[in-house]
Length: 604
Image 1 (cartoon, rainbow, N blue to C red):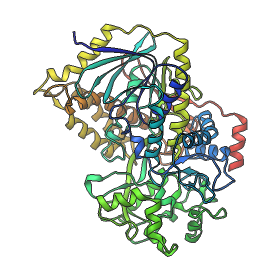
Image 2 (tube, rainbow, N blue to C red):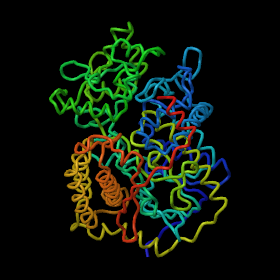
Image 3 (cartoon, rainbow, N blue to C red):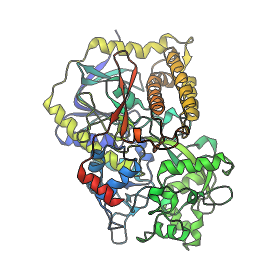
Image 4 (cartoon, rainbow, N blue to C red):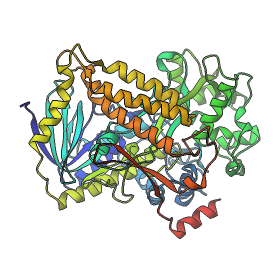
């Protein structure tokens, strides 16, 4: 029998980004024992890559803003498929979470009179994003980390969780291994919070960190949790396209929020060509008016570059496909043009967008104060994930909670920029609060030794096939290629079915994957363990995309290019059946409360 060590906690948090840290802080503050598992080192979570800001209706720049406007914007951006209760909670509680973060030491940019400054962002009616230049996520993690390390949280760095442990439908903990030495550890826990982020790395071109592989979504699914909205993947309109080594690296929406415009290879601002009907009363058709909006003019309408991300991404793809793209297969994003409006434009750009200036100068040899950037869509975010209770964040498995990008519901069919960071704070806090409450009211069911040994044996199986099995890196690369090609921004039945066939073939290859060497710091073994989770998430996305025969938000079907009334109030649910297969179901959304309906009508 393979040896392992055991630790016990009331609450186990898997993930150390914004949601995981905020959940751990809250649970610990309520007096329970908390363990937090990081796949990398503390402070290296993907949240540090978030640039633009935290969406919260503080109304510091435009006093017309309120939680009601934020709620209506979020619902409209999500094409009304959002969990309306989550959208309500998020809009109401975001301001308090931002002020709390400030009280813990976050240093936000300021207005002239000393309040938190807020900037414009796509899909938001008023300037709403509290920010720290274009390094907001980094400041959030620094602040949460500095506050959290004093709360008595036990932190397990460089650990990978292999499987969640259950007994009679209840969570009993998790099993993982130390990536440095390859030694197994069982975490016995009354409650588990999954806060593992997204899945961008199952695509070839992605803005996500190496560890965003969808592992947490898969862990929950295999433990019996329900998934929803997996077809809705957001492709951020602006990622780097050159040089190849940094293809997909994010260019913050803050560039457009500060006045950046999109042009094709003829120098034309093509975003004026396609403005949706429901945004025409808010969107400028005049370049001068659009510029005044970026400067905070309350009477100006926003430029078309700040339409929702799904729409901007498709417009960029249209220009590229029709031959009006940049030399390296993107379009041009130009912030240098503001020198026509501001005398000290270079200094202004470097102050407002320091990371972007440095990123292009160092990686692409481009001075964004003088010349345009080449940009193109990059896999950025998944709106779908684990279905949770809006108030408590508990999943359909007793004792299992989820928060952040791996939890679904808030964003509906498309996420507005900046809502991700406030999502982490609002629902990270709630997950920690209710997981602690659950832990106080329950005992830890016994973990099965046989179950633990079986999981360990399966994890070590690749070493037994050394030299004769499949290569994990090749399988991962194959999957990234066909997911990008067949399940990307523009989808159709033929491509999706072809992707599903490839996924079925990959499942058999994954069962025969092998690795060499020993267990310490072995990337081949790490990838072999991660592959089944990646394939699970790829299959869920593809099956849900096949089932939703319409175009809505982040899901665009060229064979069904319009919205359909049949799917207008439907979330696609995925569960694991008794035979271990994915069971799909179309679930009608719960009817919205009348007072919230009225808010949306008023905002229209």
